[in-house]
Image (cartoon, rainbow, N blue to C red):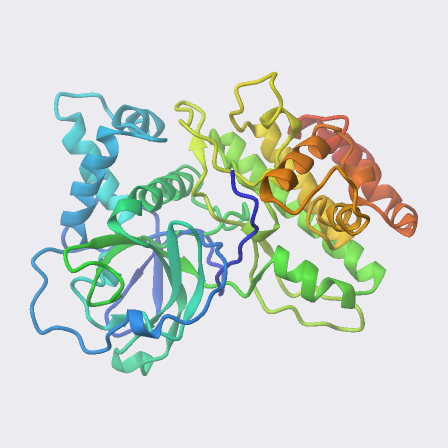
Amino acid sequence: MNSTPPTSPFTEVSDGAFPSISKNSKDFNYHLPQKRNTTSASSHLVSPVEEPTAKFSEAFQNAYSTKVPVAGSETYLKSDLNILFATPRFYSADNLASMFHLPRTVAASEFLDEFLMGILLAPQMDFLSNSDYTLPSNRLVGQGGYSYVYSISSTASSTSSHDLSFVLKFAKSQHKSKVILQEALTLAYLQYASPSTGDSHIIPFYGLTYINKSHFRRLRSNECVPGLILPRYEMNLYNFNSTISYKLSLGGKRKLWWKLLTQMLDALKTLKGNGIIHGDIKTANILITETPILDEGNCDNFDFYLADFTSAFHISQLPTDLNTTVEYCAPELIDNSSDHVPTFETDFYAVGLCLLSFISQHEPYNELQALVSHGSSPGIGSSSIQQSQWLINVLLKKDPINLNMLRSDLFQDWKLELALLSKVLVGRLSLENFIAILENDYV
Protein backbone atom coordinates (compact mmCIF):
# COMPACT_ATOMS: atom_id res chain seq x y z
CA MET A 1 0.00 0.00 0.00
CA ASN A 2 1.06 3.54 -0.65
CA SER A 3 0.88 6.09 2.14
CA THR A 4 2.34 9.13 0.37
CA PRO A 5 -0.05 11.58 -1.27
CA PRO A 6 1.03 12.87 -4.74
CA THR A 7 0.15 15.79 -7.07
CA SER A 8 -1.33 16.53 -10.51
CA PRO A 9 -1.41 18.13 -14.00
CA PHE A 10 -3.17 21.08 -15.68
CA THR A 11 -5.77 22.86 -18.20
CA GLU A 12 -9.16 23.36 -19.73
CA VAL A 13 -11.72 20.59 -19.49
CA SER A 14 -13.40 19.38 -22.65
CA ASP A 15 -16.97 18.20 -23.00
CA GLY A 16 -15.78 14.62 -22.81
CA ALA A 17 -15.87 13.92 -26.55
CA PHE A 18 -12.85 12.53 -28.33
CA PRO A 19 -10.78 15.19 -30.10
CA SER A 20 -8.65 14.92 -33.19
CA ILE A 21 -5.84 17.37 -33.85
CA SER A 22 -5.22 18.77 -37.30
CA LYS A 23 -1.55 19.13 -38.16
CA ASN A 24 0.02 22.53 -37.49
CA SER A 25 -3.01 23.55 -35.50
CA LYS A 26 -4.00 23.59 -31.88
CA ASP A 27 -7.69 23.55 -32.76
CA PHE A 28 -9.63 20.46 -31.81
CA ASN A 29 -12.56 18.83 -33.54
CA TYR A 30 -14.54 16.62 -31.20
CA HIS A 31 -16.19 13.38 -32.22
CA LEU A 32 -17.31 10.12 -30.67
CA PRO A 33 -15.10 7.03 -30.96
CA GLN A 34 -15.40 5.00 -34.12
CA LYS A 35 -13.70 2.09 -35.81
CA ARG A 36 -10.18 3.07 -36.71
CA ASN A 37 -8.95 3.56 -40.26
CA THR A 38 -5.78 4.98 -41.70
CA THR A 39 -7.31 8.28 -42.80
CA SER A 40 -9.23 9.36 -39.74
CA ALA A 41 -7.85 10.46 -36.38
CA SER A 42 -9.28 9.45 -33.09
CA SER A 43 -8.25 10.44 -29.60
CA HIS A 44 -9.52 10.78 -26.09
CA LEU A 45 -9.12 11.25 -22.32
CA VAL A 46 -6.58 10.63 -19.46
CA SER A 47 -5.54 11.13 -15.90
CA PRO A 48 -2.54 12.39 -14.05
CA VAL A 49 -1.71 12.78 -10.42
CA GLU A 50 1.83 12.57 -9.30
CA GLU A 51 4.39 14.16 -7.10
CA PRO A 52 6.39 17.19 -8.27
CA THR A 53 10.14 16.74 -8.38
CA ALA A 54 13.32 18.40 -9.53
CA LYS A 55 13.90 19.15 -13.20
CA PHE A 56 15.26 16.44 -15.47
CA SER A 57 16.97 18.55 -18.14
CA GLU A 58 19.60 15.90 -18.71
CA ALA A 59 16.90 13.40 -19.58
CA PHE A 60 16.09 15.12 -22.85
CA GLN A 61 17.77 15.88 -26.12
CA ASN A 62 16.44 18.68 -28.28
CA ALA A 63 17.94 17.58 -31.57
CA TYR A 64 15.94 14.74 -33.07
CA SER A 65 17.55 12.04 -35.13
CA THR A 66 17.02 12.26 -38.89
CA LYS A 67 16.32 8.52 -38.96
CA VAL A 68 12.70 7.70 -39.70
CA PRO A 69 11.21 5.53 -36.93
CA VAL A 70 10.87 1.92 -37.93
CA ALA A 71 7.33 1.72 -36.55
CA GLY A 72 4.62 4.04 -35.30
CA SER A 73 2.70 3.81 -32.05
CA GLU A 74 0.21 1.33 -33.52
CA THR A 75 2.86 -1.38 -33.89
CA TYR A 76 4.09 -1.00 -30.31
CA LEU A 77 0.58 -0.86 -28.88
CA LYS A 78 -0.44 -4.08 -30.60
CA SER A 79 2.62 -5.86 -29.23
CA ASP A 80 2.10 -4.48 -25.72
CA LEU A 81 -1.57 -5.49 -25.68
CA ASN A 82 -0.59 -9.06 -26.56
CA ILE A 83 1.85 -9.08 -23.63
CA LEU A 84 -0.73 -7.50 -21.32
CA PHE A 85 -3.38 -10.09 -22.16
CA ALA A 86 -0.91 -12.95 -21.70
CA THR A 87 -0.60 -12.14 -17.98
CA PRO A 88 -3.52 -9.83 -17.16
CA ARG A 89 -3.52 -7.93 -13.87
CA PHE A 90 -6.87 -6.18 -14.29
CA TYR A 91 -8.06 -6.84 -17.86
CA SER A 92 -8.08 -9.98 -19.99
CA ALA A 93 -9.10 -10.11 -23.66
CA ASP A 94 -12.36 -11.89 -22.79
CA ASN A 95 -13.05 -9.40 -20.01
CA LEU A 96 -12.63 -6.42 -22.37
CA ALA A 97 -14.71 -8.02 -25.13
CA SER A 98 -17.52 -8.47 -22.62
CA MET A 99 -17.19 -4.94 -21.23
CA PHE A 100 -17.40 -3.39 -24.70
CA HIS A 101 -20.12 -5.86 -25.83
CA LEU A 102 -18.04 -7.03 -28.78
CA PRO A 103 -19.15 -10.03 -30.90
CA ARG A 104 -17.66 -13.40 -30.00
CA THR A 105 -16.47 -14.88 -33.27
CA VAL A 106 -13.54 -16.93 -34.51
CA ALA A 107 -11.67 -13.73 -35.28
CA ALA A 108 -12.59 -12.13 -31.95
CA SER A 109 -8.99 -11.40 -30.95
CA GLU A 110 -8.23 -9.61 -34.22
CA PHE A 111 -11.44 -7.61 -33.95
CA LEU A 112 -10.64 -6.69 -30.34
CA ASP A 113 -7.16 -5.48 -31.33
CA GLU A 114 -8.60 -3.34 -34.13
CA PHE A 115 -11.31 -1.98 -31.85
CA LEU A 116 -8.86 -1.09 -29.07
CA MET A 117 -6.51 0.61 -31.55
CA GLY A 118 -9.40 2.82 -32.58
CA ILE A 119 -10.33 3.97 -29.11
CA LEU A 120 -6.83 4.19 -27.62
CA LEU A 121 -4.48 5.73 -30.18
CA ALA A 122 -4.13 9.44 -30.95
CA PRO A 123 -2.65 9.16 -34.49
CA GLN A 124 -2.40 12.91 -35.13
CA MET A 125 -0.43 13.37 -31.93
CA ASP A 126 1.85 10.40 -32.52
CA PHE A 127 5.29 11.37 -31.21
CA LEU A 128 6.95 8.61 -33.26
CA SER A 129 5.66 9.83 -36.62
CA ASN A 130 5.43 13.58 -35.97
CA SER A 131 8.50 15.34 -34.59
CA ASP A 132 6.51 18.57 -34.06
CA TYR A 133 5.58 17.31 -30.60
CA THR A 134 8.17 17.58 -27.85
CA LEU A 135 8.56 17.22 -24.09
CA PRO A 136 10.58 20.26 -22.95
CA SER A 137 12.99 19.34 -20.18
CA ASN A 138 11.84 22.20 -17.94
CA ARG A 139 8.15 21.28 -18.14
CA LEU A 140 7.98 18.48 -15.59
CA VAL A 141 4.56 18.46 -13.94
CA GLY A 142 5.02 15.48 -11.66
CA GLN A 143 6.05 11.88 -11.23
CA GLY A 144 4.97 8.76 -9.42
CA GLY A 145 6.26 5.25 -8.93
CA TYR A 146 5.36 4.20 -12.47
CA SER A 147 5.37 7.35 -14.57
CA TYR A 148 6.47 10.89 -15.35
CA VAL A 149 4.09 13.69 -16.33
CA TYR A 150 5.40 16.40 -18.68
CA SER A 151 3.77 19.25 -20.55
CA ILE A 152 3.52 18.76 -24.31
CA SER A 153 4.87 21.44 -26.65
CA SER A 154 4.70 21.78 -30.41
CA THR A 155 7.18 23.28 -32.86
CA ALA A 156 4.49 23.64 -35.55
CA SER A 157 4.34 27.17 -36.94
CA SER A 158 0.80 27.91 -35.74
CA THR A 159 1.69 27.11 -32.14
CA SER A 160 4.98 29.05 -32.16
CA SER A 161 6.73 26.36 -30.10
CA HIS A 162 4.46 27.06 -27.15
CA ASP A 163 3.14 24.60 -24.63
CA LEU A 164 -0.14 22.98 -25.58
CA SER A 165 -2.97 22.49 -23.10
CA PHE A 166 -1.95 18.88 -22.52
CA VAL A 167 0.42 16.71 -20.56
CA LEU A 168 1.91 13.32 -21.37
CA LYS A 169 1.87 10.76 -18.58
CA PHE A 170 4.34 8.09 -19.71
CA ALA A 171 5.87 4.95 -18.25
CA LYS A 172 9.26 5.33 -16.58
CA SER A 173 10.45 2.20 -18.34
CA GLN A 174 9.16 -0.54 -20.60
CA HIS A 175 8.83 -2.74 -17.54
CA LYS A 176 6.18 -0.33 -16.16
CA SER A 177 4.20 0.04 -19.38
CA LYS A 178 1.43 -2.30 -18.18
CA VAL A 179 0.23 0.18 -15.57
CA ILE A 180 -0.12 2.94 -18.17
CA LEU A 181 -1.94 0.62 -20.58
CA GLN A 182 -4.35 -0.49 -17.85
CA GLU A 183 -5.15 3.12 -17.00
CA ALA A 184 -5.69 3.89 -20.70
CA LEU A 185 -8.08 0.95 -21.04
CA THR A 186 -10.09 2.07 -18.01
CA LEU A 187 -10.41 5.66 -19.22
CA ALA A 188 -11.16 4.65 -22.80
CA TYR A 189 -13.88 2.31 -21.54
CA LEU A 190 -15.44 5.04 -19.39
CA GLN A 191 -15.32 7.43 -22.33
CA TYR A 192 -16.88 4.85 -24.63
CA ALA A 193 -19.60 3.83 -22.16
CA SER A 194 -20.36 7.39 -21.01
CA PRO A 195 -19.23 9.84 -23.73
CA SER A 196 -19.99 12.86 -21.54
CA THR A 197 -17.41 11.97 -18.91
CA GLY A 198 -16.64 15.68 -18.58
CA ASP A 199 -20.14 16.12 -17.14
CA SER A 200 -19.40 13.25 -14.77
CA HIS A 201 -16.27 14.96 -13.42
CA ILE A 202 -13.95 12.17 -14.49
CA ILE A 203 -10.78 13.39 -16.14
CA PRO A 204 -10.89 13.32 -19.96
CA PHE A 205 -8.57 11.01 -21.92
CA TYR A 206 -7.25 12.28 -25.28
CA GLY A 207 -5.49 9.18 -26.48
CA LEU A 208 -2.28 7.21 -26.26
CA THR A 209 1.06 7.62 -28.03
CA TYR A 210 4.52 6.08 -27.69
CA ILE A 211 7.84 7.81 -27.10
CA ASN A 212 11.45 6.62 -27.20
CA LYS A 213 14.93 7.75 -26.22
CA SER A 214 14.84 10.60 -28.76
CA HIS A 215 12.09 12.20 -26.69
CA PHE A 216 13.32 11.29 -23.21
CA ARG A 217 16.95 10.35 -22.75
CA ARG A 218 16.45 8.39 -19.54
CA LEU A 219 14.83 5.63 -21.57
CA ARG A 220 17.02 2.81 -22.85
CA SER A 221 18.01 2.89 -26.49
CA ASN A 222 15.71 -0.03 -27.35
CA GLU A 223 12.75 1.14 -25.24
CA CYS A 224 9.51 2.55 -26.56
CA VAL A 225 6.98 3.32 -23.83
CA PRO A 226 3.30 4.36 -23.88
CA GLY A 227 2.07 7.73 -22.69
CA LEU A 228 -1.39 9.10 -21.98
CA ILE A 229 -2.39 12.46 -23.42
CA LEU A 230 -4.30 14.32 -20.71
CA PRO A 231 -5.61 17.81 -20.10
CA ARG A 232 -3.35 20.02 -18.04
CA TYR A 233 -4.89 21.09 -14.75
CA GLU A 234 -3.76 23.77 -12.33
CA MET A 235 -3.81 22.07 -8.94
CA ASN A 236 -5.14 19.17 -6.93
CA LEU A 237 -7.24 19.18 -3.77
CA TYR A 238 -4.23 18.24 -1.64
CA ASN A 239 -2.42 21.43 -2.76
CA PHE A 240 -5.60 23.49 -2.43
CA ASN A 241 -6.16 22.41 1.17
CA SER A 242 -2.62 23.38 2.16
CA THR A 243 -2.16 26.63 0.18
CA ILE A 244 -5.54 28.22 -0.61
CA SER A 245 -8.25 26.93 1.70
CA TYR A 246 -7.22 28.92 4.79
CA LYS A 247 -7.62 32.18 2.83
CA LEU A 248 -11.35 31.60 2.28
CA SER A 249 -14.18 32.88 4.41
CA LEU A 250 -16.27 30.24 6.16
CA GLY A 251 -19.15 30.94 3.78
CA GLY A 252 -16.91 30.68 0.72
CA LYS A 253 -15.37 27.46 1.96
CA ARG A 254 -18.73 25.88 2.74
CA LYS A 255 -19.99 26.74 -0.75
CA LEU A 256 -16.96 24.98 -2.25
CA TRP A 257 -17.48 21.96 0.02
CA TRP A 258 -20.96 21.42 -1.38
CA LYS A 259 -19.62 21.80 -4.90
CA LEU A 260 -16.95 19.18 -4.19
CA LEU A 261 -19.57 16.85 -2.73
CA THR A 262 -21.91 17.22 -5.72
CA GLN A 263 -19.19 16.75 -8.34
CA MET A 264 -17.62 13.73 -6.64
CA LEU A 265 -21.06 12.12 -6.34
CA ASP A 266 -21.42 12.62 -10.11
CA ALA A 267 -18.08 10.86 -10.61
CA LEU A 268 -19.03 7.97 -8.30
CA LYS A 269 -22.39 7.49 -10.03
CA THR A 270 -20.64 7.20 -13.40
CA LEU A 271 -18.08 4.74 -12.06
CA LYS A 272 -20.67 2.56 -10.36
CA GLY A 273 -23.00 2.69 -13.36
CA ASN A 274 -20.20 1.32 -15.53
CA GLY A 275 -18.83 -1.23 -13.05
CA ILE A 276 -15.52 0.56 -12.41
CA ILE A 277 -13.92 0.78 -8.97
CA HIS A 278 -11.28 3.52 -8.64
CA GLY A 279 -9.38 1.96 -5.75
CA ASP A 280 -7.26 4.96 -4.71
CA ILE A 281 -9.42 8.05 -4.20
CA LYS A 282 -7.65 10.75 -2.18
CA THR A 283 -7.18 14.52 -2.23
CA ALA A 284 -4.11 14.22 -4.47
CA ASN A 285 -6.24 12.45 -7.10
CA ILE A 286 -8.95 15.12 -7.25
CA LEU A 287 -7.87 17.79 -9.71
CA ILE A 288 -8.83 21.45 -9.95
CA THR A 289 -9.36 22.83 -13.46
CA GLU A 290 -8.28 26.46 -13.05
CA THR A 291 -5.97 28.51 -10.87
CA PRO A 292 -8.15 29.56 -7.91
CA ILE A 293 -9.00 33.28 -7.91
CA LEU A 294 -9.89 34.75 -4.52
CA ASP A 295 -12.71 37.30 -4.40
CA GLU A 296 -13.47 38.67 -0.93
CA GLY A 297 -13.10 35.29 0.72
CA ASN A 298 -14.81 33.36 -2.07
CA CYS A 299 -13.30 31.19 -4.77
CA ASP A 300 -15.53 29.46 -7.31
CA ASN A 301 -13.89 29.73 -10.73
CA PHE A 302 -13.06 26.03 -11.13
CA ASP A 303 -14.42 22.48 -11.03
CA PHE A 304 -13.21 19.24 -9.46
CA TYR A 305 -12.30 16.14 -11.49
CA LEU A 306 -11.44 12.63 -10.34
CA ALA A 307 -8.12 11.41 -11.77
CA ASP A 308 -5.37 8.76 -11.62
CA PHE A 309 -6.96 5.43 -12.51
CA THR A 310 -3.80 3.35 -12.12
CA SER A 311 -5.49 1.22 -9.43
CA ALA A 312 -8.92 1.06 -11.11
CA PHE A 313 -10.55 -2.14 -12.32
CA HIS A 314 -13.85 -3.51 -13.63
CA ILE A 315 -15.95 -5.61 -11.25
CA SER A 316 -15.95 -8.51 -13.73
CA GLN A 317 -12.23 -9.09 -13.12
CA LEU A 318 -10.85 -8.50 -9.64
CA PRO A 319 -7.24 -7.30 -9.18
CA THR A 320 -4.49 -9.60 -8.01
CA ASP A 321 -3.08 -7.06 -5.55
CA LEU A 322 -4.05 -4.00 -3.50
CA ASN A 323 -2.38 -0.73 -4.48
CA THR A 324 -3.98 2.07 -2.50
CA THR A 325 -3.23 4.73 0.13
CA VAL A 326 -3.51 3.61 3.75
CA GLU A 327 -4.91 6.86 5.17
CA TYR A 328 -7.90 6.62 2.82
CA CYS A 329 -8.66 2.95 3.42
CA ALA A 330 -12.00 1.88 4.80
CA PRO A 331 -11.56 -0.40 7.86
CA GLU A 332 -12.60 -3.52 5.94
CA LEU A 333 -9.60 -3.14 3.64
CA ILE A 334 -7.16 -3.69 6.49
CA ASP A 335 -8.97 -5.86 9.04
CA ASN A 336 -9.15 -9.66 9.05
CA SER A 337 -12.80 -10.01 8.07
CA SER A 338 -12.65 -9.55 4.29
CA ASP A 339 -10.60 -10.31 1.19
CA HIS A 340 -9.21 -6.74 1.11
CA VAL A 341 -10.49 -5.91 -2.39
CA PRO A 342 -11.71 -2.31 -2.97
CA THR A 343 -15.43 -1.94 -3.61
CA PHE A 344 -17.92 0.78 -4.52
CA GLU A 345 -18.43 1.19 -0.78
CA THR A 346 -14.72 1.75 -0.07
CA ASP A 347 -14.55 4.29 -2.91
CA PHE A 348 -17.46 6.18 -1.32
CA TYR A 349 -15.74 6.02 2.07
CA ALA A 350 -12.57 7.53 0.57
CA VAL A 351 -14.59 10.40 -0.93
CA GLY A 352 -16.02 10.98 2.56
CA LEU A 353 -12.47 11.28 3.93
CA CYS A 354 -11.59 13.77 1.16
CA LEU A 355 -14.58 15.90 2.20
CA LEU A 356 -13.48 15.59 5.83
CA SER A 357 -9.97 16.66 4.86
CA PHE A 358 -11.41 19.72 3.10
CA ILE A 359 -12.94 20.79 6.43
CA SER A 360 -9.91 20.06 8.63
CA GLN A 361 -7.30 21.23 6.08
CA HIS A 362 -5.23 18.18 7.01
CA GLU A 363 -4.76 14.77 5.45
CA PRO A 364 -6.64 12.02 7.32
CA TYR A 365 -5.16 11.35 10.78
CA ASN A 366 -2.14 13.55 9.98
CA GLU A 367 -2.90 16.13 12.66
CA LEU A 368 -3.52 13.43 15.26
CA GLN A 369 -0.30 11.65 14.34
CA ALA A 370 1.70 14.87 14.75
CA LEU A 371 0.06 15.55 18.11
CA VAL A 372 0.73 12.05 19.40
CA SER A 373 4.34 11.93 18.20
CA HIS A 374 5.13 15.30 19.80
CA GLY A 375 3.67 14.00 23.02
CA SER A 376 6.14 11.09 22.99
CA SER A 377 3.38 8.52 23.21
CA PRO A 378 4.65 4.95 23.48
CA GLY A 379 2.14 3.98 20.80
CA ILE A 380 4.06 5.61 17.96
CA GLY A 381 7.75 5.67 17.25
CA SER A 382 10.05 7.01 14.59
CA SER A 383 10.27 3.89 12.45
CA SER A 384 7.99 3.53 9.44
CA ILE A 385 6.80 0.14 10.75
CA GLN A 386 5.71 1.68 14.06
CA GLN A 387 3.99 4.55 12.30
CA SER A 388 2.18 2.21 9.92
CA GLN A 389 0.99 0.02 12.76
CA TRP A 390 -0.19 3.08 14.69
CA LEU A 391 -2.13 4.26 11.64
CA ILE A 392 -3.76 0.86 11.13
CA ASN A 393 -4.78 0.76 14.81
CA VAL A 394 -6.36 4.21 14.47
CA LEU A 395 -8.25 3.24 11.31
CA LEU A 396 -9.68 0.18 13.03
CA LYS A 397 -11.23 2.38 15.73
CA LYS A 398 -13.82 3.33 13.07
CA ASP A 399 -14.21 6.87 14.41
CA PRO A 400 -12.79 9.04 11.59
CA ILE A 401 -14.72 12.22 12.40
CA ASN A 402 -13.67 12.56 16.05
CA LEU A 403 -10.11 11.47 15.23
CA ASN A 404 -9.74 14.14 12.53
CA MET A 405 -11.79 17.07 13.90
CA LEU A 406 -9.43 18.12 16.70
CA ARG A 407 -10.74 21.70 16.98
CA SER A 408 -14.05 22.20 18.78
CA ASP A 409 -15.05 25.17 16.59
CA LEU A 410 -15.17 22.90 13.53
CA PHE A 411 -18.07 20.93 15.02
CA GLN A 412 -20.07 24.14 15.36
CA ASP A 413 -19.13 25.74 12.03
CA TRP A 414 -19.64 22.52 10.05
CA LYS A 415 -22.47 20.93 12.03
CA LEU A 416 -24.66 20.15 9.00
CA GLU A 417 -21.81 18.87 6.83
CA LEU A 418 -20.35 16.67 9.58
CA ALA A 419 -23.77 15.15 10.24
CA LEU A 420 -23.92 14.18 6.57
CA LEU A 421 -20.40 12.78 6.61
CA SER A 422 -21.29 10.69 9.65
CA LYS A 423 -23.83 8.87 7.47
CA VAL A 424 -21.02 8.00 5.05
CA LEU A 425 -18.10 7.32 7.40
CA VAL A 426 -19.89 5.87 10.44
CA GLY A 427 -23.36 4.83 9.29
CA ARG A 428 -21.87 3.55 6.00
CA LEU A 429 -24.90 4.42 3.88
CA SER A 430 -24.83 3.24 0.29
CA LEU A 431 -24.28 5.79 -2.47
CA GLU A 432 -27.89 5.46 -3.62
CA ASN A 433 -29.38 5.94 -0.14
CA PHE A 434 -27.13 8.90 0.56
CA ILE A 435 -28.17 10.62 -2.69
CA ALA A 436 -31.82 9.96 -1.85
CA ILE A 437 -31.38 11.67 1.54
CA LEU A 438 -29.70 14.65 -0.12
CA GLU A 439 -32.49 15.01 -2.65
CA ASN A 440 -35.26 14.65 -0.07
CA ASP A 441 -33.84 16.71 2.81
CA TYR A 442 -31.20 19.09 1.46
CA VAL A 443 -32.24 20.18 -2.03
